Length: 248
Length: 248
DNA sequence: CGGGAGGTTGAAATCACTCAATTAGAGTGG
DNA sequence: CCACTCTAATTGAGTGATTTCAACCTCCCG
Image (tube, rainbow over all chains, first blue to last red; front, side, top):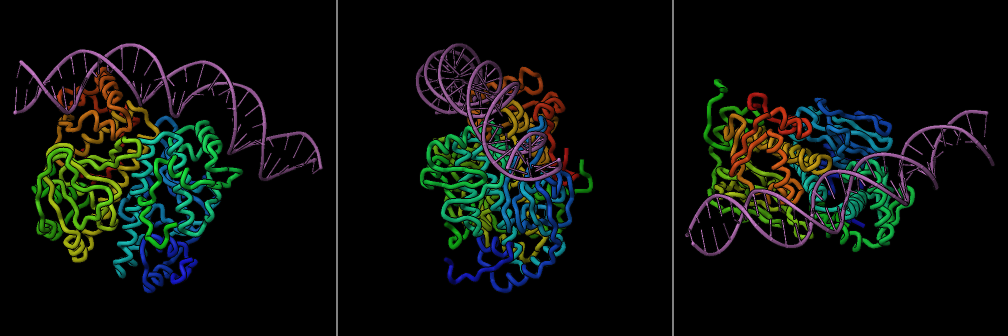
């Protein structure tokens, strides 16, 4: 569909291509980054709160979340991450992790040494700016989630998350025709949305009964994007700061 | 108290000094940045959602907040900003504002052209990394607020905000002895905490009745830091990523 | 001293939570 | 192929936190 844009199978290049235009030299340099690949089962922490990592994580395959355990035992999930994301890029300039990173399904991740990333953006400063931009988009997504947690009720929030996941999956080619596989349990959705599992369940049922989505197994089918976006309080993907070509 | 560290009256240098160690050359370069100073009355937007600024804002005096108006009329405040903060630093690499910036009391701000900031960090790449770090701390604070909105009740959240404000004000020399002036109205606190004005009022009363703080006029006096921090769910300032010297 | 913004309080309604029990699927071993 | 088992999903009933709506109060400032 994007005829002039050559496909690239490197997930990081594909992902960065959704938020900035990359030159051939930049692609080549990214492709040359040394990676250490490793598999994780669901639930096994990749990084823990208070760790001081010397490397960044690049998700190759699977689904990750960032979270913190709160006094009282509740878990707050801050974000979900898709292949191509570098969920702990902030560790480049923030020594101590203030949250943890874990797969929600069995996942393959690649580690890239901080030293290699620094060398890369010192050689090609524009790559540094693109990485910086990636962390800023991260922050923009936090603002959007804060808005949901602070100002939207469970019904709106849930609709919003379903919209966001579709737009993000579509942008990296993992969803089309308003359908996608949703890998998280209702427990995990609740931890992200700030509601209990029980209430997630009731809320999803409401959305189903309203006829805007159907959710069977782990499969989401959006029947009316317009209605779902309206329920979300007017879903506006601006906060994802995708470059125009990549928008659905 | 920090004998070896020379005082500097430039608010940006003071603020950056709380999150990184600056060399003399870096201080000088920052001091040389061209500033355009302007005063704003409370409530007048400095930047609006959808704007595409070509400059960043540095707060010299007063108090700012970042916010968005949500479908339904509610306002979500994402952060409060103190002198020395650059609340829209993200506009350097995110063209479109996804939220607005406004003073909550009459404030003096300085504008710095994006071009000048870029020139600065191209000449001194470490300054770029410090600015990047500042935006990452911003994101860390969003995560902390998300945690509150998603996982803490109104009582804990309010205590948490009072703790955060003290630590931040203290770090730039605007508070001591566990007391400070709190410039925001209960309406604004509610918009930040995701609760109604009425409930802010009841919650503050609860804190007062518990004997941990007194709030008269715009003055906050924390009687028991330990208790307040405990109510907040164990306030831990790690997420502010202040450098050791600047911590209270 | 009058007006207005911000603060304070009460009562009823609502959203989401807790607790508890039940059902549905997916994998496993016999 | 069928029990068995585990995890995730589902539902009901009662409870609690927060909102809504409405009124009143208090201070500051012109």
